[in-house]
Length: 150
Image 1 (cartoon, rainbow, N blue to C red):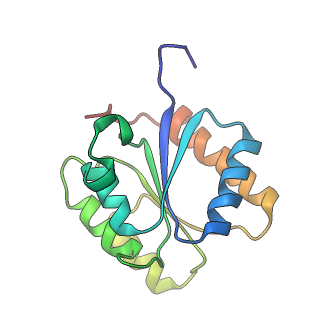
Image 2 (tube, helix red, strand yellow):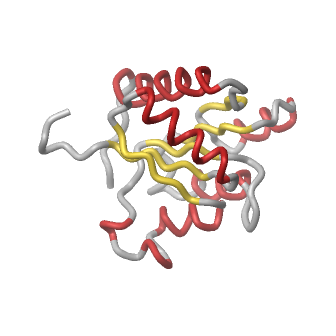
């Protein structure tokens, strides 16, 4: 990545502090060339995306190149947040990967109906999580072509 290019932001919405720490460690381990940011619930995710509240300043909330979304969070769950993201023309192009403990067929079907780009069950082992982060980074930032930031 060139010095002039800012790293792509991966924004992860995850309410569990232990899962955030594991994800941060896995991300570090895979040496992905991106900037991993966290929010703790769907409401904070939307504040980040719409640059509200503590994310009011544009520099504090760079537009993510990828959103990793947990489903079951307090205040506003992942389904509600996904619905709002995909119904907004400015946010709709941002890829959303749902990463959750659920494997229920109804959740999978519902998430794709709401416009998610991928549904992945959370890996159990740390090495699987590292591999997943590596694959996500490779696919979303080196393989596919995404629209530029707005």
